[in-house]
Amino acid sequence: TPDAGLLDALQARATSMSGKFQPQEIALLLMELNTLGIKPEAGLVEALQEQAIATAGSFMPENVTMILHVFVTMGVTPMPDLVEAMQTRARQTAAAFTMQEVAMFESAIEKLAVTPHDGLLEALHGSKAK
Image (cartoon, rainbow, N blue to C red; front, side, top):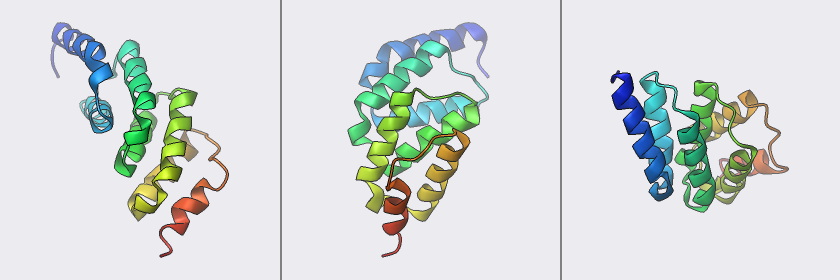
C-alpha cells in the first residue's frame, strides 16, 4: 500500500474531483480502495455518495449492486439517500439485472438491514422469469 502522505494526497485529490465522477468510476474507486484494504477518509466517502446520488439516474445494474456491496464489505453504513436512490434505480433498470446482480443486490440490502421498496424484489425476480 502507498505511504500515508501519498494516500492522503490521492484521497484529497479524489475528493476534490468527485463531482466529475461517473457512476462506474464511483463504484470502482470504492471497490479498489476496499480491495487494497484502504479505508477511505470520511470526506471522500461522503463526496462519492453525494455524486452517486446526483448521478443515480445513470447507474447501470452492475454499478448499483457494486456500490451497495462495497459498503457492506467496507463495514460502512451508506447515506439513507444513497440507498433510496439505488433502490429507485434498481426498480427502473430491473429488466437489465442479471441473476448474479439480483442476488448481490438482495444480499447487500439484507446485510445493510434495509427494507426494500414495495414491489422491488418482485420486479427484479419477475424480470428473470422471462
